[in-house]
Length: 329
Image (cartoon, rainbow, N blue to C red):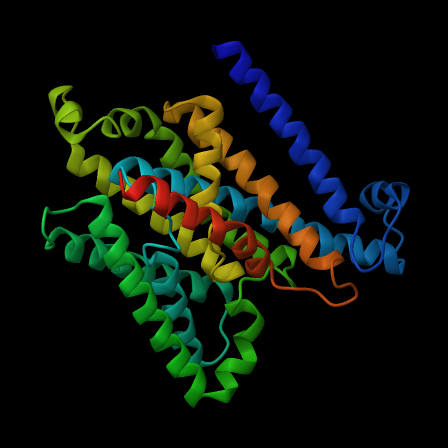
């Protein structure tokens, strides 16, 4: 079983590399593969080389990072809550981070990515605490249904507050309009470098907890019977989710459904062992967001759609299917 899964990871990495090459080569202006490789190995300052190195390559690398981060965050949330509908977007974490970023822009104007990251972490963390606390007060305690309902309500509340800020502040709307729909357009290497440490730490924490999350997914009583400190595992996992989701929102806006769809696809392939689910989720999430971003650039070229629109087109029907088939069981 281990060898086929290792081969699957290798094939996934190859598919990711091919998607990266396609993302760099294709767009409003198609560029030959020879030109792509020449820009990477012998930059000459031409228009096509500038497009590749200053626009498409950093944008594609951010798509890989954000896709991997959101997919792993969703997998962790589904594992520790045993809720098939858990996802940073659905449970209000992305909405909380978005509200914090919009409020920061409203109060202080445009800021650096690092500033946005700090406030996004705060918003995501407070949203996560609020969702878990309010869900635990419901009938039956912290059930998957209670989490989903509370998450949906708080998501609506946070987005309503966000829209309220945008209505009263045209300046704020002008500054973050495209970002708010979920977009990685205009990303450069400096922004990539600013967000890389936070996503890297979040991924390392997640992978380090993979064995414990597998056991916790079997039930809290089982985990405690095997000597696990479930409170600490959930707390560390929560920090990882906040790092991953907060960083993603700060640099790319609220991109929904990646964290919902990818873990279910991955579990169908590898089973329930999170030592395999998390690395597979990182690769599949990166591929999904790369393809979504490529589609957003070529479907209406030379104009483009925010990548968040593309993920919603795929993810919304999948969410309805899951809500119908799993929550009612």
